[in-house]
Image (tube, rainbow over all chains, first blue to last red; front, side, top):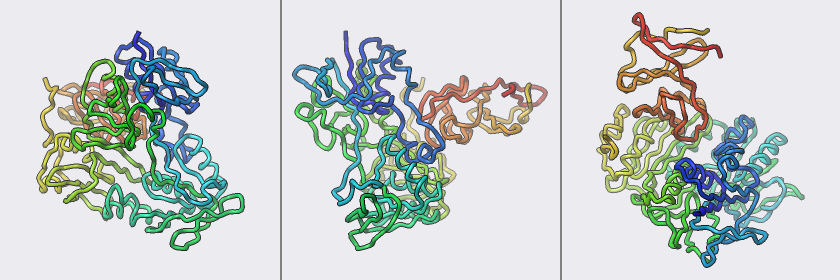
Length: 406
Length: 105
């Protein structure tokens, strides 16, 4: 009997199990996750769940795993993928044999070396209990200090403002999300938050968290002292690769080929931990919801023999206040940015191009353009400036014909 | 209110198009898939965005906010993040009117 073992029970891992069953595979599926809760979605943890407006969104209903005969081991940590004996070694010594294994261990928050990081009242946000703790702190406090303004920092700032707290952010770069979006689009995010009353301090960082047993203030590298009731650190993540080390090759995550295979026979990796050789973008590691879900579906089918290349153009959203923000594709550098709509009025899309090729699309409150641009990104299209600038032009007119059209 | 309710004129939703109609306190989307009309709740079950503002591809509507997809013939969520289906309604064109069958909530 074939045994598929999935290490990591977040969105990606749970989606693999779901896909295997939906595709009709009735053999052994083992799903191992360190968190005690059944797999849940993380996007609400910085938004509606944090604000107390929703409960958890489970990837599958809690009873699904037993109903579907999936051997779910939640609250159990996998220590090592042993390639010699073809077993996954669990904490406590149990060994789970596999024919093929999917590593979906995700990422963890980077813990910068800042004095006082361990003080009570200094939080970070990754897991459900983190969101619970921040919500409790928000209930008892009136002022939050955020260190870092990436997507987590920006979304948490928006949620805390919604709850009525004062928010001050210290950010290393010159705008929010500058490393991802560049200064001009980062400036649009900055304006959004400024209009909602967030105080932002750029080009500065946390030197030390101060407090007598409990957080009282951040001392910054530039000598500022920012007081607050609690602090949240959001300065990026790092892939969780320990299970692979000493066996499956590791290099900024776990490298996989275009079909999501690692260099080790019968070992696959997906989601935040996978450094995927993408057919359009080259080797990239993507830390977003949709990617984990799509890779989970894809590897499920590949486990059953599909042998298909993963070529999704990548897409994610971020909701901040009443703004719907979306982005597709992947660009670390671009030589042209074409805007349709108005950045000032916060209704725009920005197309990032290099050598005329569309690499990425970002939008704020223009809900159509990003997803309609994905087939263009995937097909390495070179769209004309005039059509990209035209707010009325429907990008679907440029889509390549569908391969499966009959 | 239950029973057949007029939402607009017959022929008002062309092939490949969607429109949203407010009926009392609910919002109903009508999609025209190659001449066949389908009506469904115009509220995405993920974050309450209007589906009629999204894109229709065959029988699948895609939410413009977060990309959830629903089959307009059954209401089933075929792509997350939404997992719950949207409600669907019977629809007909009669007496020059576009009508949907509302049931008691």
